[in-house]
Length: 153
Length: 372
Image 1 (tube, one colour):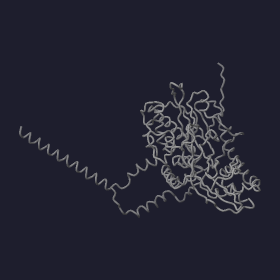
Image 2 (cartoon, helix red, strand yellow; image 1 turned 30 degrees about the vertical axis):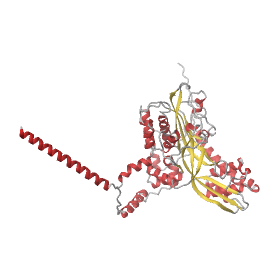
Image 3 (cartoon, one colour; image 1 turned 60 degrees about the vertical axis):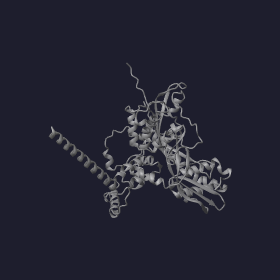
Image 4 (cartoon, one colour; image 1 turned 180 degrees about the vertical axis):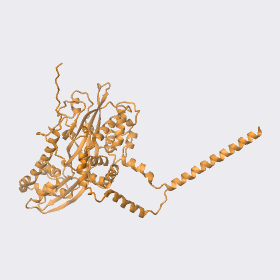
């Protein structure tokens, strides 16, 4: 598998691949199941479970060091049109990686991009933002408001 | 000396069944699911992922269940599992500055930009047993503020940076290899990257005791908890076949920046020095302990006299890993029958020699006395 053509390295592709990876599997599966006209695909690389070494930085900003690994599942598929799709997803869910790869391939077909953006990518992005926002609003409720009591002597 | 011994197969098989039986406990009590452990014992899961050096909450929960709740045994199970997986590569360095904050506190600045966010913490509990938890009540959802936490919260170290009051921590090597103790064995003196990797997977209890020892005067650091932050951040990875980086998921991490007393040189005026702690999940005690020990291990770099265990990198790095430590201590349970027989022969010989020598001396003394 060689590096793909430049139009497929666009920030747009980076965005949708990231959204597919960070989505909850239940959300992804139900949106995928509701998608009409699913294509036929072949597995170029069957789902495979492995690890990625997560790196940190000394002091948060300095030189890199190895923090520890995380589980990751990857899968690559090809459509009849010849479009290749890749899925790289944290955890060990092979179905998640495969669906992500098929959607990645479909998103590269111009005639499908817009509908899939509306029916899958955007809803996943919104749900992710909502769950982040809920957690963040709970955290914000624990922010300390200091006040000074003025005393007259 | 190794001698093959047969037998005990049936006893071993039954012991394993007995272990499983004990794991299940009273059958009238519902069985724990992996999801229950993952969702309701999250700090145990976080500790197992951190010391097991593998981020996967489901696997950590499974390990805790399989280990009957023995956390170190669960760490061992996760470490053993990770050796069966291929490694696809290494991530881009995570950016803790871009963290979606759930907790962020500083003991050095009351009014730091972004504020003090307590998050979910035991710090303000009374440490009194809460019997309502035994009564199966439903827990209400936590209160929510109107607005989420502001983005881009500055690190405390960055605030001090502006005045040059704290040592800078800037990368000077972005392309070189990053030492990896899971691939090459550690040699001494060790670099800071190797030390931090070792500490990140090290036993929390060991690091806690070492950190505590530095506070009690065994290699004093004079530390302040400059900042502790916990929350979620994305992990980016560049697959070879893509040639550009993508986010592959989100993880929770805890970071601790310890600010320690000054060091200066002919070129640099006195400034605060730093110790750093970083863990998977919410492991605050571990992150703080790690930061204390990281700073203590930088003694040589700052020209400090090495007098205490926490400053001795061979001592710390060789004894921090609880899988290795547990293995070596527990191997004493394995049959040492032949070795022990050998020792028995030796101790009997020694005793026989001493008895013979004493008998001979007594005879000499008796003969002397008789001669007088």
